[in-house]
Length: 406
Image (tube, rainbow, N blue to C red; front, side):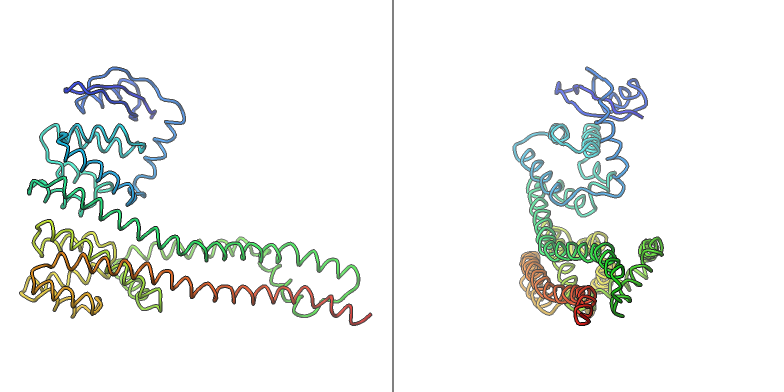
């Protein structure tokens, strides 16, 4: 299949340009005509555009739109809706301004469904890779309440906060990771190039190598000889873990193990609690019933342990238990969150207190990430210093022994 650049206009007289993938120009024209467009021009696109479209399509099943892209899209659409621009025209406009071919195609398809009389939320349900259930349900509530622009603005804020939390975590991990990679590269260079060359020089001079140096060189030779095996073992372990992770029971047990780890476990728990609080707050503030909100949160939590806990809570609330009681029994949620939810239940301001709880735990995730990295940095440096010291002694010891014999 090839990529075809097109220029078309719709029934309202608006002109649009973009890319479409088809076997022939005629097939491309048929695809566009089915979407309600009138053809002005179609031509085979440049090879680079074809490659980009094909690559985007190949990876679309594995990659989702980032939180930053979702926030940008929601804010733009909210502005257009607030300005009174019809949904159909607004989506077409955003599709033409975008630089993501598959997202462009998706927006065109959603716009076409709206043109045929379907609601925005119903049209988006057919594209779960781009529009998750949380997003669709929020949009649906906004449509029913006549506050779609406000809902889209809240979604933009939600995705902004999610992106900011992810960015802070990545930035906090960047420096230790960089130090580790550079140190590992230096150690490998020393082991596989510098030390063997130095050992050859000493051997040619008739200087015997100490036991420590011989042990290090033997280890290096074993690694070289079975290098393929050393590469395959991590790959095989990765494949086994990946397949095992598709088993729900194993996935839950693995997540519980992570929750039990020092520092990292608490950080993971806080991140999951922050996300759950933010989603539940947003759904409740949009007028959704608690049971419906819990059901949606369970489906889009992204964490098997949290999904299991929310399902347990959902069943208890359905039988007449309070949200606070069920969350306390589940054993997953911290006391501070339980207190805030109890106050929210008593005061009728559940969504507001959940939003404050989400803000608090997002701040805690940022702080604890930086604290964890600050604790790991000296441990990493001590470990690297020990390795470098061992290697330095392996190299310098023969020199000292040779000098002592002079």
